[in-house]
Length: 234
Ligand code: SF4
Image 1 (cartoon, rainbow, N blue to C red):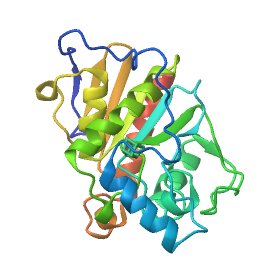
Image 2 (image 1 turned 90 degrees about the vertical axis):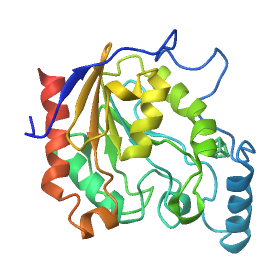
Image 3 (image 1 turned 180 degrees about the vertical axis):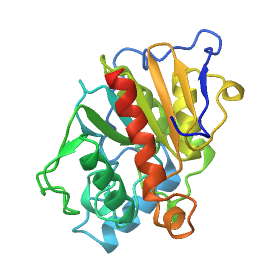
């Protein structure tokens, strides 16, 4: 375990649970999801400017029967928003998929294209916010609104045992989706929390900014996924 990690068993808030949203709620929004007007307007502008891009809420990628869910922030403009697959097409994906391949959570070759044939192994990737936000910064109300889809994604994974939360937005939204009290699970790279059957793993986001500034090194990132592997194998 990393030396700066903590492992806490956290309690749930009130009557909330990680069972997912009310029956009938879908885990994938429609391509024209109107629930966040600012993001819908940005999507329409991008559709007009770049008609060959995906330009829609980016669906989760991977296996619903997997034991691991990786939660990112939101699609990058020229990454997932362009290609339609989480973390595909920009730097964040280079580090994430290289790490997943190295730790056995993916197989094949990552080539920055959704048709590169890469397969996830026992894991799934999604974002806290499904639509690309301007300047990569979703508003709190947008994070709250899109949480219905995060909750649904979690709720439809019956074998889920680990959630990796990439950055503070993913951390905060996942905690709320699971009904975990924020005060009992403070964000920190390498921190771990147990919420009923699910272990939560914190990591700094694998953005180019974080790696260029030295906030996150590939070794630090790999250590988080090595812990996930240890947990699953334990
Ligand atoms: S961010 Fe989520 S809730 Fe908001 S418009 Fe996109 S898909 Fe809908």
